[in-house]
Image (tube, one colour):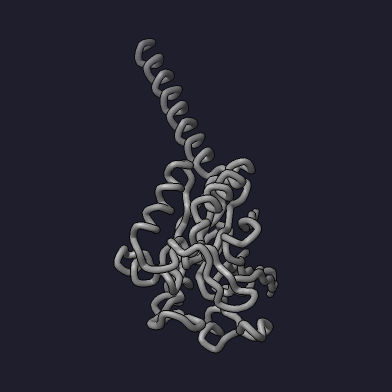
Length: 245
C-alpha cells in the first residue's frame, strides 16, 4: 500500500514536470519579437545603373553590398527576419535569386519573399505565390499582385481574396504584403478599382499593409491600418530599409 502511494506521488510529479516543460516550450516558441525588417525592389542583376526616369534610378549591381549591410543592421537590433517586397531580381534569372538566398543563409537570417513583376516568371516556376507565415506575434500574409501582366498596377484574383479572408482570422498581429500598392500612383488618396474589395477587407484588420514597386516612400493610415510603400534598396548614396514593430 505504501509503495503504491509513493508510485502515485512520483507519477504526479512526473506528469506535472512534463506539463510545465511543454508549457515552457510553447511560451518560449511564442515569445514576442522586437520587430521585423522591410526591404523592397532589390533588382539584383549585373547592370551598374539603370535610369528609368529623372528620379527613378536603380543600381542592380549593388545588391550584395546593400543586402548584407541591411541584414547586419537588422541583426544589431535583434531582428530575426525581413520581408522583401518583390522585384528582388531585375530579370528572371535564377543565379541572382540564388545569390540573394546565399547571402541570407550566410548571415543566418530569414527573408520572406514576395513576388514582383520583375521576378514573376521565376517565382512562378519555383511555386512562390501567395501564402502566410506565423512568426512570433505576427502573421505575415503574402499575396501575389502580379496578375496576368508583367507591369501595370497589378491585381488580386478572387481565390486570393478568399484566402485573405480566411488568413486574417487570427489573434496575431496581421501584416499583409504584396508588391503593388493598392493606390493610384499620381493620386495616392484614391484606391485603384481592382483593389477596392481588398482595401475593404484589410482596413481596420491589418496592422500593416506593405508594398513596393513605386521606388519611393509613402504612408497612409486608414482605420488604424498603416499602408506603407517602401522605396528601392540600392541607391546612389547608400542603401535603404525599414524597421517596424
